[in-house]
Image (cartoon, rainbow, N blue to C red; front, side, top):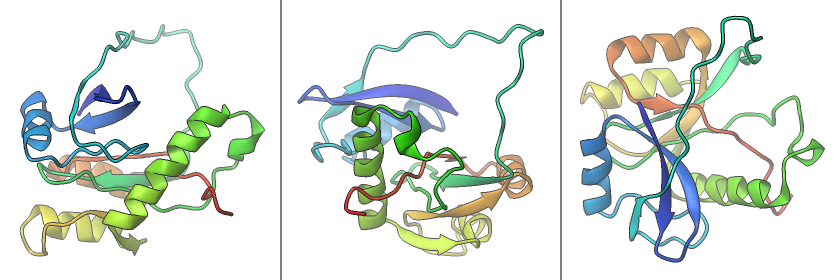
Length: 166
């Protein structure tokens, strides 16, 4: 997976994960990438800082047991629905970031089908062409996420914050 900072023509920046650089280019050409803030589909890669490797003597971050996951091949980005994380967004997430994550959630719920705990099963069916290609969101365990990765299914865990209207 390739991580890009994506920017719309109105200056809003957001993160995106793609199977490859060419997958990003195809999705941009098809108008499949939409700004979660304003809905603009005129997007491009933004500036990013390089990802530096961790030193061997640093502690790793805690990875939750059940990972929210998003599945996307070369189609629309597909996303996730999970309970709020142990650390509530209000407990330290900057307001601007929280608002962007709430906008992302609204877009996911508007454009994708909820599949709940059957996320891994449905993502695999879509990947194999056994089910209609469409955006889905749901939950996957760490084991299911590993299986999807082994099968070549593109997906990503995304933060799932409470709705802005709740």
